[in-house]
Image 1 (cartoon, helix red, strand yellow):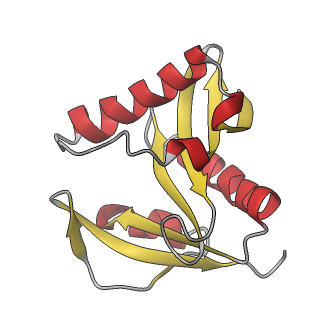
Image 2 (tube, one colour):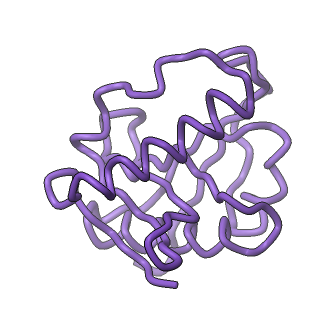
Image 3 (cartoon, helix red, strand yellow):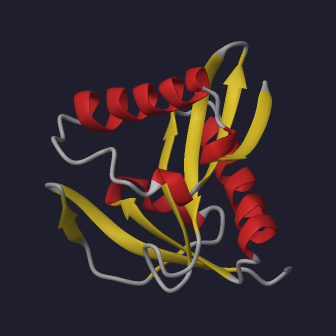
Length: 148
């Protein structure tokens, strides 16, 4: 497995296709959630992903301050195979990318409520009540980075 951290302009067409397909397959088809998955934020994001051979098996994007929140934000966190440690690996890599590319001192995420413990295991703390986003229960969470 290999880790990648790239700006939008650094993605080749096969990588971009693989990322968008994985996101669509899980967030739109599997979760049966019809929403604007391609939202014009990808162009400003750092794309963090893990490839196994030619296949993208885990992904997230990192957005700078002021795009989604006052903090650097991580979103679209996905692993093709669940409960195999890929989500944790890609999230740790995303936190590193947030520090490296955007000098993050805190990271914001809107997490699906069922994944609260997953994010808490990496230091995120819930900062909101539960709310519906695209008919799926979410919570806002924040990670304060102490070791910049």
